[in-house]
Length: 331
Figure 1 (cartoon, rainbow, N blue to C red):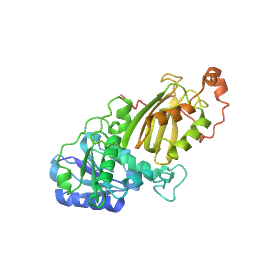
Figure 2 (tube, helix red, strand yellow):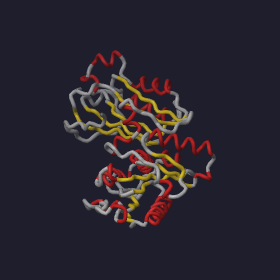
Figure 3 (cartoon, helix red, strand yellow):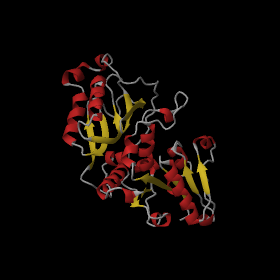
Figure 4 (cartoon, rainbow, N blue to C red):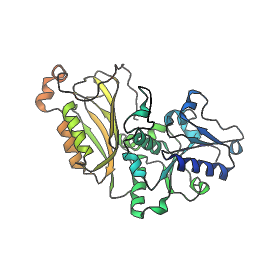
């Protein structure tokens, strides 16, 4: 395998040990990449033409910008290995801790739930996901974890780790943009087909033409966080708030942490409503849809139009100014 191998995961000691074992097994240099290193445009090493002997193993620090680090090398040229500790994988995805205890204003590493978001992103960007310490966890629990990872990233190779050489032996998928590996993108594009499945794990696509009433959405989010429709682990997609008309927003949630951020204004070119994907454990799709529908505008509210919507009670965090550029995140 001539590709640069990047090893990621929020469990630092386990990730580092796995990266070290991989470097030894393949007789490659080991590079440590940390947050401060990303100031350099050449932070992620490129393999040289002689490939195998000169390619490297990179240990991506827990708080590294994974998209930047992997994208700097090109998705098709990187073997992205997510190391999961079976003893607390789901706990990591539900963790509301920050990645870094003390950060400057505007540094997302200090956000509530940033550690869970990093854990989910590592799974979604991976070409393969490997489980360590799986022998210490009951088989049904490991099966749920593997199915959950497969729902979050349907193209990834998932396997119980025995040694790095065995883990890397099977062929992985590298085509396409790295951000398109995420299960929610697959679901929005109508091609979500996870390799591993379990009766407890479900991914649900939700569509609603009407924008959300911000106050009722806030109440719905509280109920969903309390488990009213099952244990939501991850949701993402695109949404609209009636009180902020003409703005398409990115919806992102992991565990108990939620972010709704503006992408740009588009004068309604992409419709008025919601395109969201939810993945979780023991979900009830009808209950989930019902609760979200309660947050959508009623007939009378819809008829009142944007001039009335801007006066709705809006307890959600304020947004910065947005421009008119809308990135195309789906096919």
